[in-house]
Each structure stands twice: as structure tokens, then as C-alpha cells.
Image 1: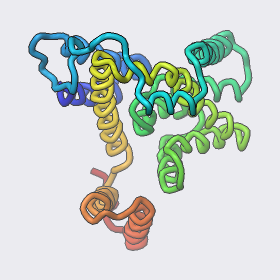
Image 2: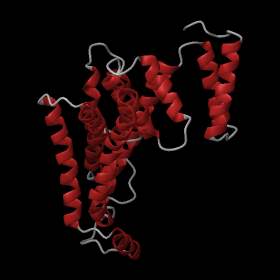
Image 3: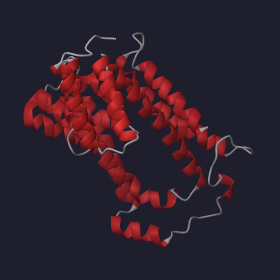
Image 4: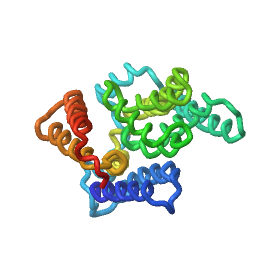
Length: 287
């Protein structure tokens, strides 16, 4: 079941980002629906007498109230947060999301608010990793802030730097509004995940022991993997435009996958190979 959910999420992700009849911003609705739909399906499947999926424990095997383990108590002590703190953090996330959207929709003209709203809304709707946000961000900033080529050049630059994938937000915000824009964009994109982690932590130590919750997480994870796969297809279609690009992709993919090259070495090799093709003007006929 998990594989089927991943395949479905990947196929839908590719479709909505490569069809002229589907609005470009539909991913902001479709992605969360796919994720929560995957969680719901595995939840329902786990309650069947003969589940399709494989689960470490079925909901019928939950035996009364959860007794916290030593690890749970240690985690709770380190976090130092109670249920009321988690509820406050969730409300903080919601107020920032609804408030920023409302201000922008009411016509409040401030470029930093515009940057924050775009990145905070995107960060609130993305599950499964940084690759998933690329088509969503492209729909928001191209061609309003930059060209398509500038967008993917910035993506390549951000990927070649140390740090998380979300550093790409700094490039986008900085291109539009300088250093302050870069800071606001990064805070906006990283903020939702940071806040929601602390909102969830007070509940996690108990919820993670329930079989029904584990079943939901299994479906969410499967759908998230599919969305990551769809994001990779999107990146390939946008980045590999001629034979030289394809050769760099194949060689660097082989170095990383089979010869265990690290990310810095693989990026450096890709740059050298690409520079060689450019210097001798080879492989530049488009597909």
C-alpha cells in the first residue's frame, strides 16, 4: 500500500506541474490533500481485518493508556514543554499564516510582507523535503521577481553551498529585496517547520506509541516520498535541456550512487565536466 501511495503522489505531482489546463498554484491544495489522504488510507487499512499494508502493530492491539518509557520522560524533561505550550505554538503558527495572507489580500503594500507571506505560506504547505517546494516557489516568483533561467541558476548555486536546501530562500529573497529580503525569506520558509515541531513535541511522546498514529505516519511518509519523486522529475525536465546537461547528470549520478562520492566532490566534478563541454562547445543541441 505504501508503494502504491508513493506512486500515486508522484504521478499526480508530475501531472499538476506539467499540464497547461491545471492552474500552476494548485499544488498548494493538492499536496496537502495527497499527504493527509495517504495518512487516512493507511489508518483505514490498519483497521481492516486483513490489511493490505504491513504494520508493526495494529490498532486493535493497543492495550489501554500509554505508559511513558524512560526515553519519553527524558525527552519531556529536555523539552520542558507541556500540552498548553504545544497548543500556544500551534495557534502562533496559525495566526502568522492567516494574518499574513489577510494583510496581503487586503492590499497592504510592503515588499517584505509580500516576501514573508509567500515563503511562510509555502513553508506551511510543504511536507517531505526541500525538493517538493521548487515548483511551488517557481510559480510564485517567476517571472515576477526573476526569469526561469535565473531561478534555476540560483537553485544550482544554493545546492552547491553547505547547509539545508531551504537556503535557496535566501537567494530568492535577496534577488528581490537585497539582504533584508534574504533574511525575511529564510525566516518565512523555515518558520512554520520550527514552530510546528515545538507544537507537536508535547504530544509526540504519547502519540508515537499508538498503533493508529503509527499507521497514519506510514501513509504520510509514503505520500511524501512520492512528492519528492515528482519534484525530482520536475527538476530534471527543467534543468536538463541538452546532451551536455544529460551527460553531466548521468556521470555525477553514477559518481554519487555507485562510487560514493560526497556532495562537494560530486558538485565539483559536475562543474568541471560542464566547463569542459562549454569550452569545446560540445553537446549543446537541445533535445
